[in-house]
Image (tube, rainbow, N blue to C red; front, side):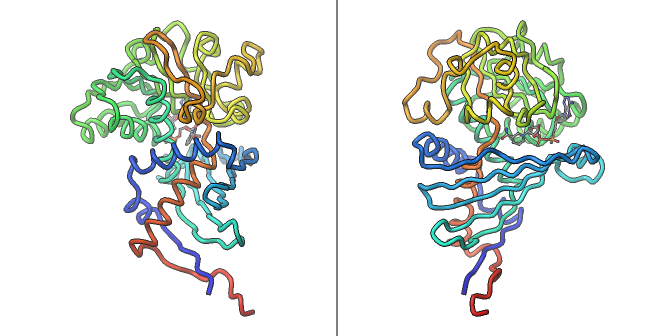
Length: 331
Ligand SMILES: NC(=O)c1ccc[n+]([C@@H]2O[C@H](COP(=O)([O-])OP(=O)(O)OC[C@H]3O[C@@H](n4cnc5c(N)ncnc54)[C@H](O)[C@@H]3O)[C@@H](O)[C@H]2O)c1
């Protein structure tokens, strides 16, 4: 008998905490930089007539002997048109020893959590330890989860949010969920000028954060730009910042790093490190209070694989989910 475990979003949610996700993602980043993860380039299909895209992210963790693929949408009209998240996703995990599909699970929450974990890890490596003012550029799902995750590790006092829409709703909802933090809707400039940590999490195709607003000591988590053509940061910021990527290959193609890189403003030599190199102690993180740092995170398959594997193992232990037989091997 060959069982495949099915886990829906509610089941994933009952099994996963942000703290567990941070540990799973850290381990994944380090495995990537130890050279025990195969990750081919991301494949994207554009559904322009529906203002959408589908991304296929796959990898093989030789550390865990698990192969995984995530099929994730980016349908920007979903919240308004269908009351659905823009980033619906599904993940399949396979046993690398024999190709058996061991688990099919919702990837929507996992994408949200593993991306929030990425931002937190970026900030833990690169932001000032006393950071307490956050500039949140964006008002969507990631804008919520990034702050939720960061608040577990930093003593956040103020979140100033800017968005092209939904600022008031964001402030109202987040204020009720995080009563110890003060949330306010501001301009992007006011948010950035007053922040030690800037988080960009929009689907923008133009710069929203300008160089002249960024004060010394600021850390920027560049999260929203994960496709060719997307952009959130003024390329000039890169020229005076310590640049860290999740994957150099992916960030030069689809991260915010693409813009200064393609324009020839920076070269490979200007990219300080991949985040896993910092976690492994091979490269340094923040070195002084005045550095401007950027963590450009495009999202790696190993984040999905490690987080899903954690959820799968906990589901088996706690007897959660439903088994199906995809293959009848007697036929
Ligand atoms: N780096 C990663 O690993 C990763 C993971 C998940 C999502 N993302 C990206 O992060 C971004 C936000 O994702 P989400 O799940 O919060 O989506 P969401 O739909 O919940 O929120 C999207 C946000 O972007 C804003 N926005 C949309 N178009 C814009 C434009 N042209 N200019 C300025 N703002 C615009 C919206 O107002 C909203 O605040 C997306 O680009 C998504 O692809 C990246």
